[in-house]
Length: 131
Image 1 (cartoon, rainbow, N blue to C red):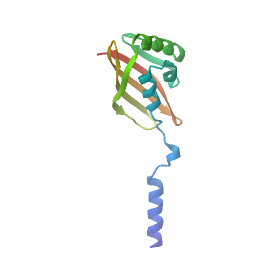
Image 2 (spheres, one colour; image 1 turned 90 degrees about the vertical axis):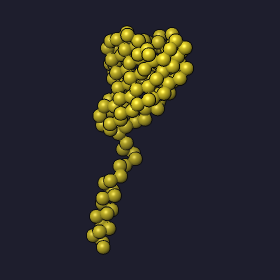
Image 3 (cartoon, rainbow, N blue to C red; image 1 turned 180 degrees about the vertical axis):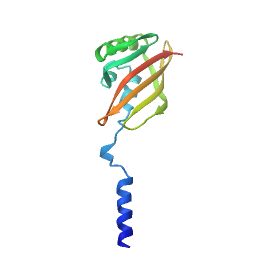
Image 4 (spheres, helix red, strand yellow; image 1 turned 30 degrees about the horizontal axis):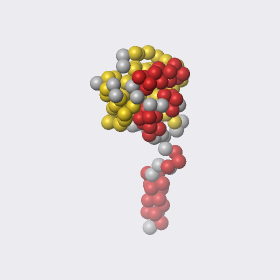
């Protein structure tokens, strides 16, 4: 009986991850930043360089350059709302999110690609494509 309890305890200990060691941070702050049209809040989650496509304006940008491009985009397309429609989250790997951004000038599909490491995530690719 003691051996069975020991085996069961060991199994349970290894089966449940430590909540303090969660590898995937929540994407919620990114969703909030896009929803409010805040390029500065969004840029906090950018990799040092980012592949950015804003309605056909494509390129590799530094974090600061990408923030300026998005600031201009949000100014020309003020947000009416943003929601995620697809998530593919993979711990300690790459994750993809697809959302819909609504503005007075139309609706945009948003594709967000995130790399995750060291209990943090960084956006390495972001696309806003008009529907």
